[in-house]
Length: 159
Image (cartoon, rainbow, N blue to C red; front, side):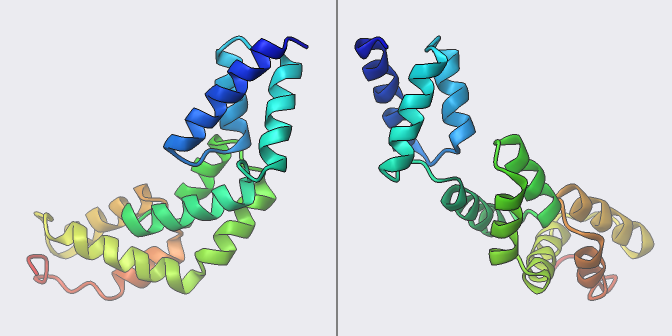
């Protein structure tokens, strides 16, 4: 194994992790794009995992917490994003169950709905349909969407 190539790969991974937390798969893809051999990539990732710099469980929990709080995303959208990041399905489900209970998702859907209502042009049935589509695009489950929409009262759009 080329020691110089391994050192460069390790440095790249540390710099990438210093900017933001990443999943193991993201680091693997990033290193592969830099033309590092598979044995170097595996060695660097193993070392980073051993040192605690890479942890998919911690990454998934942080991702769910961040997306729910800042972007008002629902469970379905976050599950999809975690899958794209290469997080194993069981890890994603564990993180979603830990932070995003059905009650919490309903609360976030309600906040997202109220935020959207500030710019809503339609009222009544059309307004409710627009809100449904908006919440659906944010990845909320149908149960969370209907829970939020049950509080909808036409005419309160400009709160």
